[in-house]
Image 1 (cartoon, rainbow, N blue to C red):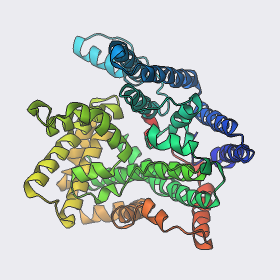
Image 2 (cartoon, rainbow, N blue to C red; image 1 turned 90 degrees about the horizontal axis):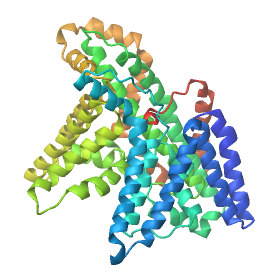
Image 3 (tube, rainbow, N blue to C red; image 1 turned 45 degrees about the horizontal axis):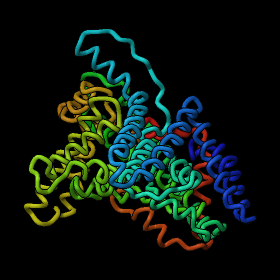
Image 4 (tube, rainbow, N blue to C red; image 1 turned 120 degrees about the vertical axis):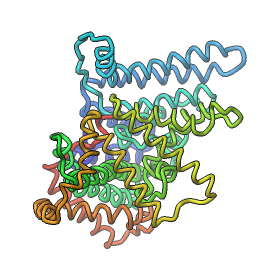
Length: 471
């Protein structure tokens, strides 16, 4: 189910929201939690019905394993602890690998050995990469003895809470479970509801008014590449997709955070104006921050050791970005995208260490954005041939003419306008969080939220699926 649809806004959300707080009003706390869990399961089941049974089995199975890991803490149970932990992680990775990487593995085996094993064309369950990461993080923390023995309802609320279930932000049990347990969050809070609607409306506008038209146009270009791409179109559509990708994902995050506010749950921020970054170290501190936090905590820190050269910062960074690239998609272009980002982060770290201070904004921001755009070409390209065609188009200076630029501008006036507005927001506007910090429950903010929502509702027949649903 997509947030920006009539079914979600007019049917699902009101029913789940009203039921949750009505049950809490009558002090039926456990029943209220159960209602929200059932609603979250319904949210996932409607979006991915064929995978729902496996999703349910995975969630319950991880709870059983995590509970067992908590009971095995102590010197007498080390072997069983390690075996149980390894089995749990392998089960999660195996499920993700089967659905996401089976055809990738078959393609590469066929290419290397000359065999012709048929592709399975397995449908990727919505959000499997995101909830798998949360489940693995829960097992790791249980293995380390860092989780409590949560009851099944609190655990299910943490994993399945529908605002963040499909595309994140990737939440941590230590942040969310105490909020569901806090009794003051069981009461309907009109201030939180107001700010939640305000943030949700901003996210919805990002998605529908900025991301969707740019995404549709850019995908048409990248789906039909030929051998001699014009310079203007190559750069325009690459920048267009880079901007649309940000508004698509950050729009979803804003909607998820806004929904969390409505239920009195604070969901972690996911973006901090990443296109204002002055280098790639800075960029990855601002982009998809909950994913970066997960990879840092569970991949980087598992590799990095200060006193061992072969496990130093640069090696740990490259391993982390290799995992990030492979996680994003079953293709070598995704791996290359991850490694390119890793190299750029390492270069930034080295220069920052030598200089002792970051690059000036006037230079660092445009240079960083340029390399973000170039790397994003790898991300959207289905293979290296298509990526190379786009890169060649970007260097096709002989195709440039002022008349060609004017014609292309006139033919795509709407998208040029949306792109300029998007870039202006990226570089000059405050983040949603900073805007929300100034929020006041008065008619000005109410009118602003209502106007955005009405505009979005009137355009919901044109909704484009969120780009991260494929992950």
